[in-house]
Length: 256
Image 1 (tube, rainbow, N blue to C red):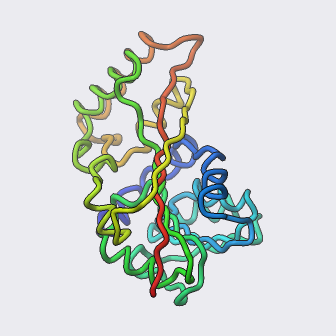
Image 2: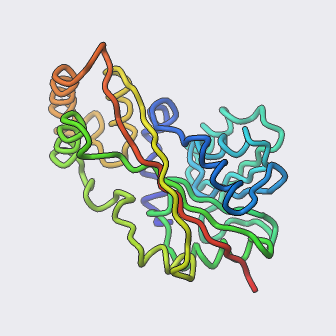
């Protein structure tokens, strides 16, 4: 991970914990059906952030090593997940996880892969996976054109987002995935997902994003004023819907 990616969410942790979308439990069902994923597998969740994806696997019964370089985000995950005996928090990064060779069955990166160098992360994932192990990438991609609200929200982000067009994970294409997996023959699944938010939830979701101007930035107050107007125009019974598609990519990936 670039140094900026290791620090840029520090001021956003509270909103990240409260307002980022989770991942559908169908991800586990896909993994079980497609490559035999079981509760006794050991998982490394790399770029685990505040533990949203980590919790998905802990709830399934897996032992999970949560690898996260950002101290504030890692601390939030530790507060959230300390009650799980199979949760292990590690201060490390995608290119140096500190895990032993061939020590895990599944390595996953959820909503974090676009911060990685695909080749160095791929080499590290390959090192720590056991023979027959699988690497997977997961992210929630917000639908930008599925409703008048979603189109208006996208325009707000384009207007106020500091580096919105360059840091979104959608910028990661097939070439980066091929460089990471080391093959074009990776598998893909797409699952529906959504958040139903009141205004405070929508504001928190916006401010959890690394590109959203924070308090003290001249764009912050105008952005929130426009967000309030947008919400008032599109809310139904006090809520709006952020629709996502949860995209999943996986392939066997281990040292031969």
